[in-house]
Image 1: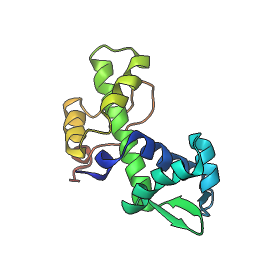
Image 2: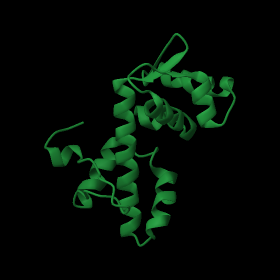
Image 3: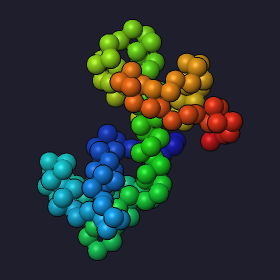
Amino acid sequence: METLQRLTRRQLEALRIVAAKDVGGRGVALKAIAASLRVRPPSALARLGPLEELGLIARHRGKSRATPRGLACLAEYVRHHRVAESIFARAGLSVEATHEAALEVDLALSHRTVDEICEAEGHPTVCPHGDPIAPCSTARGGAR
């Protein structure tokens, strides 16, 4: 199972917050993460533990920061989500509905499946909302 497929939606949100709030690589305090998640610090810490075990964040002196692996995982998630949105748009869902539908499947899709879908869809470059989709390994001429 790939790293992205191991994450819960709540863990993914915690990773996003750490990456977004870490200005200058100094890390983000647990209290700030908890406030952004709208939970108490112990609940936020419970979400961060698995991220640290997977090497997606590093914690030092009470502060968390996203690792290069964590940032790559976030970028891959965005790609999965936008490719899924594109599939649902092609199936006839409204632009608004594509986001909700993609949330139902984006974490479950493997990289290989997303690459195959991307290739079958002709390598879409933007999602239905106009946001860019990173090219898949097939389009880049390599493998994952």
